[in-house]
Each structure stands twice: as structure tokens, then as C-alpha cells.
Length: 295
Image 1 (tube, rainbow, N blue to C red):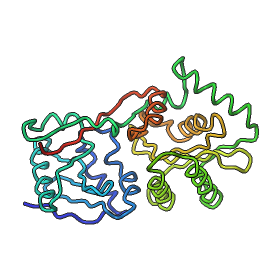
Image 2 (image 1 turned 30 degrees about the vertical axis):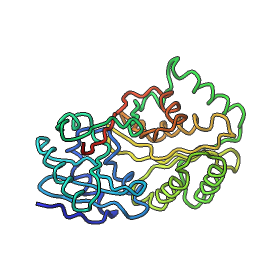
Image 3 (image 1 turned 90 degrees about the horizontal axis):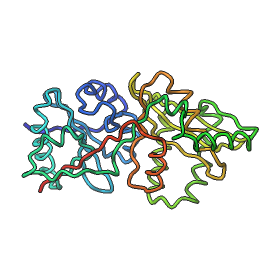
Image 4 (image 1 turned 90 degrees about the vertical axis):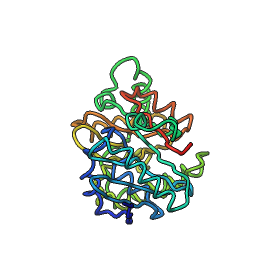
């Protein structure tokens, strides 16, 4: 019994939705379809269905990696991992399963697999009401930044994205960000953001923009999964405008997350500054992800 993979397409949102109930971690981002589709900029992502099991494989930095399998019967998780082993062997690549939930990791034989906590891929999950209201001492500095922005830039405006009005302005902000960033993955992230904008209607993405006068200074790209969970895929701001990040964060939450319990703002990729920023918003949960390899 082998796995027959096929190329991921836009129509596979229905396929992903079919298996969402099988997830070990319902608030994780690994099976957020818009996220997976947007990240497939090079056409490397493939999927497979077999006996109430769902598999995804792709390439990251030239390496073949597998998503944790989704299985209807959780007792079959180890069987699904074995099928992935066979697929890796067929491709003559090392076994590497990323973003495995803690409950899944505990099912695996520690004498056969090396299971490590991949902190850089841990999801930050927040109470939506915290992002909307910013109540209490822990958010004091956020409120100060927002007040400073409002007092400094009287001609600011915030609204939902309009492709005709805003696409070119986002491109200009990205160019400015790329010229000043030291983030080694900026070129790849630029491709992801552009792909998200290209398909925002197909993916039902919720995008917010922040202007000062006629200058776009921040934007946020999001997806509402259901009443339990929403996802922030991208958030960018011009740091020359003090408080722009705090404003786009809060106003986006007010606009889109009022009927949502949690917001997953994804991982920090091991970037120290990004980790500090994400922790500063007091996450309700830090969803640890594990990497599975052969010993």
C-alpha cells in the first residue's frame, strides 16, 4: 500500500476542509489551506488521500519535508508515519516530518525516531479579545504607541483592502521594506505576499490597510477559519511611522476578529526580534511543534 501524490490546486480547499476534524491540534496553522497554498510558490506541494488518511509533502530550502499526517483513527498515526517513511525511501531522501503536535510526538517509538522540539515553528495563538481591547498593564506600551500614532498622524485612515487602490501601494511598501531589512528570507516572503494578493479572492483572505495621507504605511493579510480560530498570514508596516505596527494589529482585530475566539499569528522562524514582538502580545497558547527524523 503506497502513497500516490498529486499536485496541490486551488480546488483542494475542499479536500483540506474534509480532514480538518482529524487534526490533533485544532488551533495549529499547518493545515490552514490559504497558508499552504500561498507558500507553494514553486509548485512543490503535493497531497495524497488514502483510507481516511491525508498526507502533504513539499520542499523547504531544497529539502523534502512532510506535514504530519491527518488520520481519522488516531491509533493509525504510527501507520501513517510508516507510509511516509516508505515515501521518503522511494524518493531516496531522509525522513523529515515537521510541525508534529505534542500529542502525536508522544505516540512515536523513541528508539526508532529522533523527536525534537522545533521552537522556531511553534505557533503563537492569542485571545482575539486581547488583540481587540488591549486591556491591562501588559498592553500598556501598545496603547501608548497607538496613542502616539494617532496624535502624530492626524490624517491617517484605515479600511479594508481595495485591489485597484492599494495593490501598487503595497508593492511600494514591500520594496521599501526589502531595501532596509536584514531578514535573510525577505525575497521568499515577498513572493508569498504577492501570491496571497494574486489569489486573495479565491482564498477569501481578509486584508486591511493603513494610510497616512496618501502613503500606505501598513497592511495585514488574514483568514477566518471559523468561530474558533482565525489566522494572520502576513503583517507589514513602515517602521518610520512609530506605532504603525500596533495600530494595524489592533484595528485589524477590531475589523475582522470580533466573532472569533482565537487568532493564530504563526511562528517566529527563530528570528529574535520577531519572537520578542510576538511574546509581547501575551499569547494565550504557544503550540510547540516537533520534528521527526530517523535515529
